[in-house]
Length: 207
Image 1 (tube, helix red, strand yellow):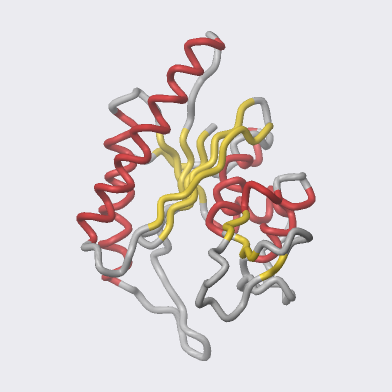
Image 2 (tube, rainbow, N blue to C red; image 1 turned 90 degrees about the horizontal axis):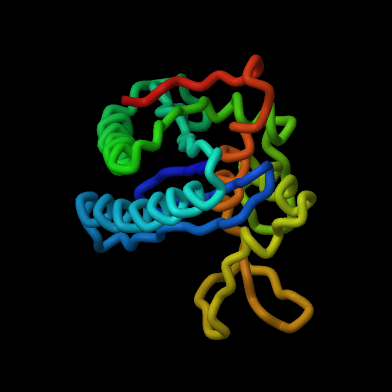
């Protein structure tokens, strides 16, 4: 099972085999890159991931590969405002999702999408935000906390250079500065969604 929390800034990518997380990675881009350059970088990362998964699948023989991504939100909302159509977001994510589907098709890997609220409620147990002292966005923290509880803390940590300019970060027992990467955490939750009972899944095939 491959879970992808796709975005132009930083896409989380997770591989789960037999309900155990085997790999968590991400694909960061910079603001100076064009959207085309960002998609090309993600395509390269996914090609490497899909190829590796296919090789592992051949070794395990009866192992089907499925990719799950987040479904495009057709409506967005700003604090204190009504829901509205964000056409730029929809067009951008449509192109990104098409890239994922086209890349996966080269390896005969089907791609399905899931609504954010569905995987959060079914896997994490809640989609409600939670305040925290870990400098994680409240709406993202329950997933980070869930991953930590499963023993995957090291997989969702991004270590920072000693001279980092970030104002907010955590420090481990060895004095290393780090932050939690909620994109990696989300990719874990999305991948694990593929293991809940089929009757509870609300997946849609992406074409």
